[in-house]
Picture 1: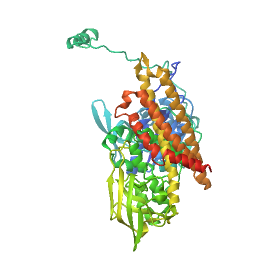
Picture 2: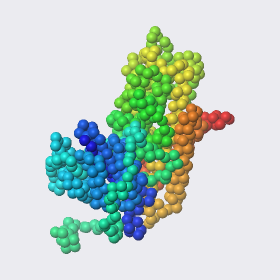
Picture 3: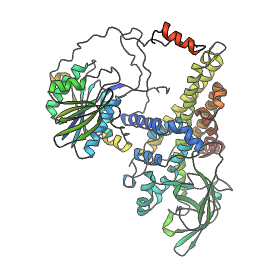
Length: 249
Length: 390
């Protein structure tokens, strides 16, 4: 069985992002970029499935600029087998990504696509769901546990108020939540081996997909600064403020 | 927050990827426990195995014995710098002191010894320590007093070693002992297991820094080592140790760079939020000058070390000797830079830095060992001038 794992290069989770002065987006100059943490969890889960004998090959795919190749190499160093890099300098929206991935699925015929539930840059949380719709495959989103069965997967999902376990038949789309696993470190021997693993270079045009944006970002702004609070003298004053000023009780 | 270092002249995707991994490993597995482990004077052995699994002990060791099958001074540099930045020198010392004994084993030991000993030390399953320094002297190896005499098929080793980093937990020791006449020529090396008859060890506690590391005094009382335990030939074997000291000096220097950079980053973070005389500390000229001085010394050390790393790699490729003079000089520059930055950062943090529990306080205590261990500043200067042919 083959598993396809899409991965995205995003601003590192440790970076304190700054909005560009003209409010058109986030400043990416000289900012450390890394693999989206949810994608790392997806790569790890695919590797664990392979280690358990539930998969033979793991293919990672990334859509983005030349540097996205580094993100693919990281996944290869963790244990994926080969990569596909769809090169573009344009910002690709979730729908464009899903359309491209659907074409990759057509070519590669994986039986499972595992991807992060969202990327920590846009936090859109849509690609997995859109891909499932385009392919007509079952989807199990926000997975916190994945178990391979004879004809598919038992997936435990994190939902509001608890956990839900569903069965999906193969082929399927699974999106990962934070508690699914703790991704391994790429060891130095594996970093060196990853150098020799193949990465196919493609472009969106190769797949005949129009990735032109459908959405327009009007303005990107910093969250409002938190203002200083006040100290109250007594419980009575606190209750009074909650009642009459805040109007919450 | 960690400052993003600028692009580097000798970087490759593999080096960048390795640097990322090591940094993340340290951020996740070491940094959060730094203060607890230092106060406890110990840390879990599992960390040795995790670091081993990453490949951190494998530089210059053949793949057949669990090593990487290659060496790269720039990767050693990144590893050393990141470990120094963690601000817990004791962990750094305990983990990486095995490096000064695995190198000689790789060079001198028999195939069987390498398979048995090297594999488990490089994987992090067990520890190893180099035992050279004696109560009567450390830097002058030509005068070491521990003796080994032949007894049938065995050697009987008698003497004492002290300040042995990793010495309490090691399973194996590379021990220097005199088998011949005076001077370097009469010294041999022995591979001695911790359970050898006649071997005992005593923990050295109450150190100024490196609290999390185990340090020992070792006693050899007619300690019996098999003839096969001898590494290489009498006298000649010390060349392997000397070569390895160069790597040690380089790693210690990289550690100093990490320590200095941590001091700078923590000092900046504090100066930005601490207000005095109606404005943030960082807006006062006296403080800004300290930041400038720290930063420029760090940049200078960083550049010098990267250049030396390149020269180490180049020398290895050409089969030439290590750049010993530069390594001696940079070791002094490195410990002086770390000392300067720790002192300035402490001045900026003021009372907050004087409290136990913060990285600057630990580093301030630990810069001293960097100026002494692995070749003291004075010995390094002598060596540098000697290497200049003077």
